[in-house]
Image (cartoon, rainbow over all chains, first blue to last red; front, side, top):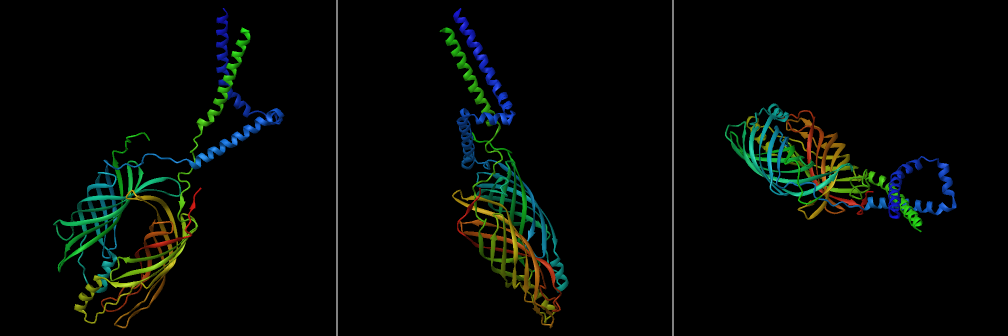
Length: 261
Length: 246
């Protein structure tokens, strides 16, 4: 009988415990809304003075600790960017630079396979839209000459990309984005307005790739197409320098880490 | 005695309940707040530009010149008011080098006009002030071994451009020009150390000038046109010590 009574008392004690635990947050909210003068009076009580001081000190130390934590925390995590084993579809275009007589606009599509973080190979095609410049017309007008012109039309190429630079940057402290710098070498064949035959060309360039999302990048690129063109009097080596932008769509769109983040 | 132990057990349970309640009371706000929430994405970073002065020497070339390419050695000064904003001054001196097109035109026009003398103008001086904004700055690893700080910046400036003018064999003259020249462009810096950086910039200067005489040895009037100028160089930053961001 006595044992059952003790069991009953213990059970009720646990019920009261749980009830008290559940009620405390409510009591705390009620305390927040308590009349400030009443709280102040309590704080003025000599017996609670030391406790209030300790509470205040504890709070200050906690806030200081949190501030120190924010200053000192260093986050080491797996690299945001993984290129190895992924395919990048680049779509973009560019404008020719530094040619006084003709200008071109380019539309490019390139498929790159990133063999490693630093090496990629790919193939692409370009369509160029060329026209003569005002300087061309000026030479015709001022000198009575009719310069021969060679406008690029279309071409295909293979390329190798090497990425010696990998880094990150911020813009006014708003966000941190990953970036890499690459050089490219390649070659292919193109067609110009001077004949239907395909002409071989070499290509060299450099670019800066900004990774905005894991599946999307934006590359700023300079390319130099070097080809030989046959004019009436002679053949000449021509250089067509383009500055352009490429939008990179990455497949697969996300990366899988071998270990937990 | 038994009753006393029961009341002691009840008091202990109540104390445990109060302790759990207090713990919950303090745990609720701790779960709601993320200590990193709202904090800057970049902190305590070294400010390679803020409050520093930059003195640079450059060498470059104009691009797209039909008749005379201009090699442009020069210097510039920048006072970096903040890490992203600077104001400064530039001075470039032009050295003319004839292009192949000039020689070709001289040959071809000379076949029909023996008195033709291909007189051209070059850039003599480019000088002015500028403001630069560096919206992108960061760091990268060169070949996974050498960390380097870098930035990209946009330039907006205005100054004067001077050309020596043309005196044609026909007696016609294009007087020397000293025209207002706005310019716009951009470039980048790579810091090799705290005080040394390599720079590259591509700017377009809008310049009024006469490029050459025509086939009758008469210089046409001056006209405004964009002139691309590419420069590369090294910059020295003082003071050598870097500030750190908050």
